[in-house]
Image: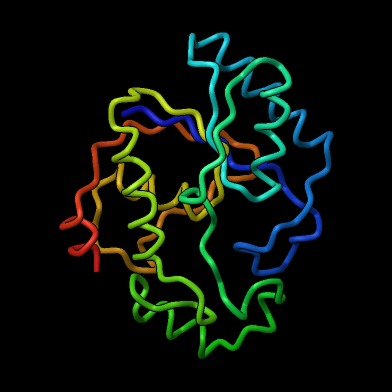
Length: 191
């Protein structure tokens, strides 16, 4: 499967904050600008005129622009960002270093802020990918966490630790991946 992933545009309100499932509004101009780039890339590369997004505004707004231009826009909850529980919306420097260290120590299974574990995010994405295994090519406006999981699957899949985890791509950036189908045992071995 080939994935064309664009990270959603930057939300100025998120600067310096832990933002996972917090549904921040996105400036319409930023959404339209990314939608234009996505549409131009699809036209140039002969890609399908359909896009997948999470339900959160910072991804969904881009899909809405594309739908206005005749694209099919699919919204799917499996593409939601990691849920950071009580960390949501807090400034990163306000989160206890002990809490961050606990997450790093059990990177795959720990639930940061009491929210969702990375293993849960992986399971959601695995289900989404398996349902679309025959698609061949998928265009997705995604969150950093989802993109990092998918990049990790596409790479050597070393042990999932905080120090080996892929860096988040910049906002609005395209990430192309050829992705082998992840299997449950690979997720279990990740830790």
